[in-house]
Amino acid sequence: MKAWFRLLGASLRERRGAVLFTVLLAISTVAAGVSLLGVAGWFLSSAFLATMGIVFNLFGPSAMIRGLSFWRIASRYLERVVGHALTLDLQVRIRTLVFGRLSRFSQSRLAQFRDGELASSLTSDVAVLDLVLLLVLVPLSTAVVAGLVFSAVLQTWLSWWAWLILACLLIAACLIPYICARGASRAAQQVHQLENRQRILVHQAIRAYADIQVFAAADAVQEQVDKLAQELGQARLRSNAWGIVGQFSQQVLMGVALMTCLLVGAQQVNLQAMSGPLWVGLVLALLGLFEIMAPMMRGASRLGEVQAASNRLLTILDEPEETDQAHGQAIALNKPADLEITDLNFAYDSQPVLEQLSLQVNAGEHIAIFGPSGSGKSTLLGVLMRLLPVSGSQYLVQGEAAQHWSRASWFEHCALLAQDSPLFLGSVRDNLLLAEPTASEQRIWQVLHDAQLDSVVRELPQGLDTWLGEGGQQLSLGQQRRLCLARVLLSPAHIWFLDEPTASLDGPTSQALMRDILTAAQGKTVIMATHDTRLLPLVDRVYQFEAGRLQSKSSLEINTLEPN
Image (cartoon, rainbow, N blue to C red; front, top):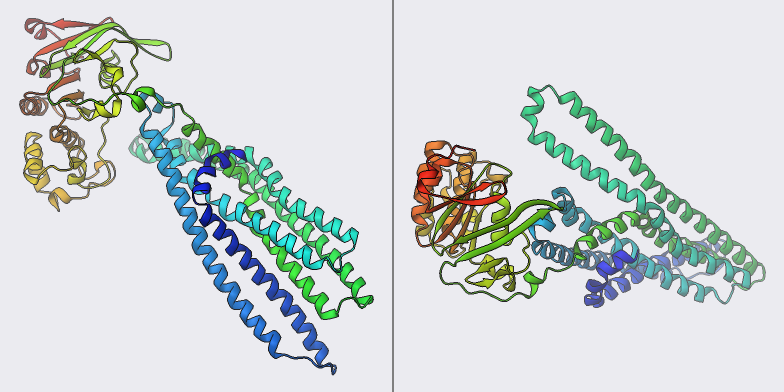
């Protein structure tokens, strides 16, 4: 349980005024409800006795019932408005905190997480945390205060054994949710894992719909879905079992408390220390008091889920901050820079990818890194752009060690076209302005022209403001790639990193397009990774991967290279 206190503690302290107000409103609602039941019981009993000739004033109690009813309705409404507003604010704070932490991860560290897990953490895991406030903290605080107040009211009539019973009931009402949470934690974790697997499987099935139909694999996929659904159902049953235990405990506690109140009340009525109508009113008030336990028990059945979600979020937030990102010096480059790496080594999980690699790129130079898939081209670009960590003084920018500069500042001077650069949910204009938010309309159309995409965009229903859909569904794969290239063209960055820029483009189109792109990039440093030999004559220098090393190629040697 301390996991979600760690996660929410700072936010709750910052909003302690709103939290306290929410608790007071909840107490007010319970007080109104308990008082309403008590007064109603006393009123009905007294009204019954009035039929037997006992004088009874009906006006006062009826007015109290009306007033308490209005009080209860108004208080509950305010409680829900304030409580849900506070919950939404806490969710926004946690999402902002988690996303901000993820945005500072390096590429290698981010790759340790599954996309589905990160999406689930930012959505469902954060959403689950609202249970802490609405179904745990507020009801628990209300139950303790209301229990103490009700016991204080009954002190006149309660004997020592009744006090002991009610004290035990109050302690049990506070401990049961904690016990249920511990029991449900492991089951909730398993439910989350199975839900993630189910989400990934369905997503893959949708994306691979054509392959499934062609290979007649629908039955096999359906079998996997059914098996996973069955496992998920069983895991949910195990998790919900603790909720049933909590609800059963609620009924038991309520029964014991009611019997105690009945016995004490009957004794006091017989001794004429308490009137019959007052006895009935106290019994009904006690029943209303135990209604507090209903949200507590609902929350208890899901506390395991809350605990598991909090642990997953803390896994992200507890990741150590990268020193070069957080504390590096700011850079100010007003022109392209010389880049130099010397004897660079890089490995993934002790698997060497780059060994004793050296490279020098002059400011404003266009170079190509040539080699087959898996040779290390993308890894080298990641190192040069500092998406992958470097150590020591192996990487120099303008003669200074790159790790002395903050990555965030360095990124301001770089533009990237990755192999899988995406189009974001939005319009054509939205996707382009990510590179340069202040770009003019004229400038936008110019880069679209350079990317051979202007005629395509003009034919779209709303032109630049056409909604592209998820992943740019309105465009073909080749058009999506050219739009990503146009985004790089629009960037004011001095250094461009292009990873397989002609992917999804046919041969003649790719060569003509890259000629226009590199012409527009005059004066900028361009480092391009490619396996397309048709692009090599367009750059100033070519480096080829040979046995894990980079070898510079002359213009004569370039013509002899075969496609990889």
